[in-house]
Length: 426
Image 1 (tube, rainbow, N blue to C red):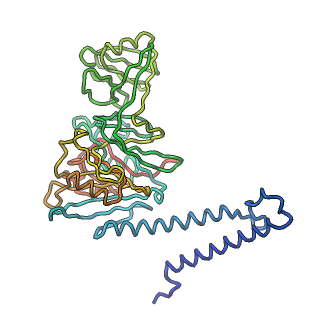
Image 2: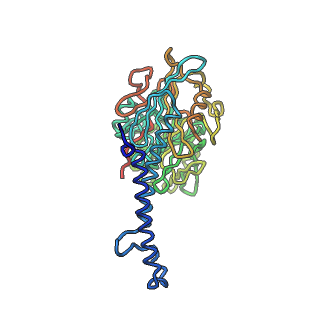
Image 3: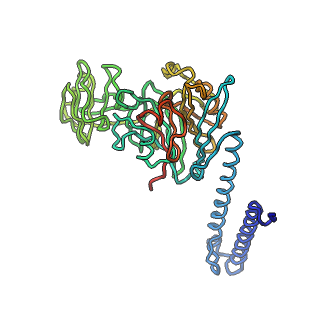
């Protein structure tokens, strides 16, 4: 039979008490030593290490409190996951990363749900970021989520934003490592990922592109980056990630090849996209004046002005905004994705947790969710903010080497991009 001393909780309590006592002795010795008459007039050394012991008590206290608080945080994380997801199958993916499999019932019918929840402080060695399907960052590419996860050495991956089925180009804002790959579509909501002094934080907003090209005394508004043309009057910038050549210019339009900030070619036909530049395509009336001096500058930012943003992944619609259910499907021109379907979502909590969700649907054993049901689920999981990602046949989640949900196509269809959790690269 276990004795009191064999109980882990009792041992931790004893260790805590002993450590606290040791710190108390050090602090008392430090105070006694430096408050003696010899040092009474020299207050600058009040926090110096105790000379006889060579110990900095401030560092010792900080180290002890951090160690103990992390242990407590880990225990609280485990207990909270069990309470939040009752009657579920829970497994540990890594420190601070849990995978939860559960089934909920809506109108008496089942819905299979896979959740990954990550405590960003406990999982300090890992990071969340978007990833393209191509290891060479070619936008016109589609691969399975298993391939994307392996290419990025990821422990978790979930399909990302919408994409053009014909070629795989992401439809919506996508930024990776501070580089803008594609611009917004219909100003849809996006998740911004920031790293402030090594601490990750998130924000949500309906993002607009705020970009322009300036040259020869003219400033021309850029309507989008690496996105399909919607209007002949739009000015589009194509970077090397788009492919080898730009599309034909629109009617009454032209394209300008730019290398190292200098216009090197003008044509209405497809133009080779230089590795050290880009191609601007738009109405001739707007672009021809830039040819006068040929020096040109491209400026790219977003509205809102997300200064310091590292990654952006688009989606839509909102699911949770400022802690409340908020589904603006019509405003973001997403009426076509209504109804009950497989769903993917990403959200975050006020206490710095990340939540990824994949919902199976379109089958008798899992009927899928409506957007409102998904929004309510994300709120019940504690999300302060959450957005819908591409769903339907694209919904697929990968955890520790395998696909954990049951997409309509075994292993999941080839997709354009994903959000992945992988080890930080120092």
